[in-house]
Every structure is written in structure tokens, then in C-alpha cells.
Image (cartoon, rainbow, N blue to C red):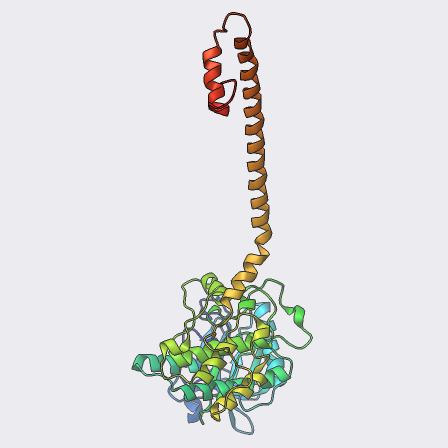
Amino acid sequence: MGGAPTPPPFADLIGRSARSSLAAGAAPAAAPTAGAPESLPAVLTPGGARGPLSGASWEDYLVGDLIAAGGMGEVYRAVQRPMGRVVALKVIPAQGALEAVRRFRAEARAVAMIQHPNVVAVYASGERDGRPFLAMELLTGGTLAERLALRRADGAGFSPYEAADLVLQAARGLAAAHACELVHRDLKPANLLFAGDGALKVCDFGLARMPGDGSRTLAGTVLGTPLYMSPEQGRGLPATPASDVYGLGVVLYELLTMAPPFEAAQAEALVLQHNFSEPALPSVRRRDLPAALEAVCLKCLQKRPQDRFADGAALVADLERVRAGLAPLSALFPPGQMRTGAEEALRRLSGRRRWWRVAVAAGVAAAAAATLLWWREGHQERTAAARSRLEAVLAPAPIPASAAADLDLLAQQVGADDPLV
């Protein structure tokens, strides 16, 4: 759906796989059935790459250049006939995995439920020769991930209110999805696309949780992108609208500071940080950051879902106030206490493990008591035996050979002040 001249190697627009269709073992597409590549309208051939379907007639669509490709299929420019509308045609391999097909169909159902200018529009969906396809709004402005990369390369950044405006647009699209009881579950810059007029739109609902479909994901299954994943998703718990708010909060933090709140080479390390680490305050990384906008960002990044904005609409309300120069209504922190709840999360974790410490402490105490009892009993027995033997010293009889040793032992046990000693 972007306007890149060559298909990117990691095409988030068409799924989570980073492998190409050939690397994934996908069956080659059927040969074009109509129209030689050079006969395509210029609008379909803006200097991009050709794909297996380029030049073909696909249902009501004339297929043009390839926009993106990956293990889950391809995205092409296409013209919808007879109206002449240019669309992005998303097609998955004929022998795609069942899970890929299921997610593809789920995306079609999810986006069809939402009608909002900040959500990519789906015009039609169907199947041909066992290959599901989507005809979607063609967005030619690239992704937010690409703009982030360009700003980093240039050493520039986004102004605080430029970042707020971008996230506000995404939050509005998110609010529309939440109003339809949809949870996106994979918000990240690569899934935020720009239209030609600069509008930012949420796309890629392939992981969305549908209304009344809470059992679709097995308990303990982790879905999403670890760099932007909410704490509860990282633990394999169900995602809620507040989980999407967390992902958008990570995006806002990255736009404000040009770095994500947490970075690690392993997904497991990122999950731990999202759950139990405190990110650096955005104002530490950027001195010109308005306190109200920082408060909104940290409200999104709270460890507990109930401490965040409840959904996209609540986030929109506070962002609109901040953009109008007003104080936020929900993102309120006591002075000097701008935190995301990492310490409390650790306390809750230690509380769940406290019974282990109690058990260990009880075991150590019991062992110490038993040792003391054993020592005291032994001490008393040895003292009594020495006294018994020394009693003979006081009687009119020969002194026992052990008297000196017993006297020394008794002196060590009870002290030199003992009458017998």
C-alpha cells in the first residue's frame, strides 16, 4: 500500500513474516491472463517492481506493479473496473497456511466494520482459485516507521506537538475500532500509514480480536511485536483496548525522544522490561517537552491496564486538551511522581512469591530450634555425667583417675564459680 519502487524485504503490510514468498515455499502464482505489462496504465506502473500477477486480470481488477511482498503474499497496485478506482490489492499464496488465511479473513471482517478517515478503507474482499484477496485504499505516503528512520538519519526529530498530532490521528482511528469492540493488538509505526494528503491511518488488523471472539487466541499465546507490546500481552494474557493504548504510548514516546522506552536483543528481555522496568522520563531525554504531553505519554505506559487510558476515545480526549493548551483530565500525577508503576509491579510479583520466603524462613527456624534443642540436651547429659563421677571425690575413697579430666570438663561447661568445682 506504500509507494516504494521495490518491495521491502520486511513487509509488515502483508503479515508478520520477514521471509519472501519464495523463501517461504509459496507456490508461484498463475501466469498473467490479460494485458502485457507494457500495456498497463501509467498509474499502475510508477517505476515499481513487477510481480507474478502484474498485467493479469484478477476478478474486477487489472493488476499493476508490486508494492510489497513477503511470506504471507503480495500487495499490488490495481485498477478496479469499470469505475477506474486505483486500489491496493492484497493477495496471499494459494497454498498459504491455514492460520495465515484465517488472519487474512479476520482482517477483512474487522476493517469492514470500521468507517473512519483514520482507518484504512477496505472496498471489497473475496477469493479466486483458493487465494483470498482484499481491495483496499491505496496509501502512497509511506509508513510512520519510514519517516522515523528518515528523521533519525537526518539527525532531526519531531516537534512535541507534531508528535502529538500524529498520535492523535492514530488514536482517533483506534477509538473507532474500539467502538466496534475491536482490539488491534499490534500497533506500531509500520502499521501506521500516510495517505497522499498527509492523513495518518491505522492499518493491518490481521491480529485484531473480533467482538465475541475472545477464545480465538489460546491462553498463553503471545501476539504482537515485542518492542511495542503491552505488559499483559507479553505475559500471554488477553489484550484489551488498554493494550492498544500502551502500544500507541510506546509510539508517542519514540516520536518524542527518537528512541523506544525499552531496547533489547531478545524478545524475552523486552517483555521483562515492559513488565518490571521504569523507562527514562521523556523529559530527561528531551528538555523542551511540555509536562502535560509527558504526563499523557506516561499514562499510556502504565504497567497495569486499569491505570492507563481505558481506550482510544479517552486518549483522544486528553490529547485534544493538550493540543488546545489545556491541562489533561486523566493524565494527572502527584508532584515528582511521574512513574509507570514498575516498583508496584515488582512488589506484586514479590508478594506472589512471599509464601516461598515464609516457607524457607520457617524451615530455617525449625532447623535452628532443633539444633539448639539437640545441643542443650547433649549439654545437660554431659554435665550430669561429670557431676555424678565427681561426687566420688567428696567421699572417703581413692580419687578416681578421671577426676582431673571431669573437673576440667565441668569447669568448661558451668564455670569456675560452681560449688563443686
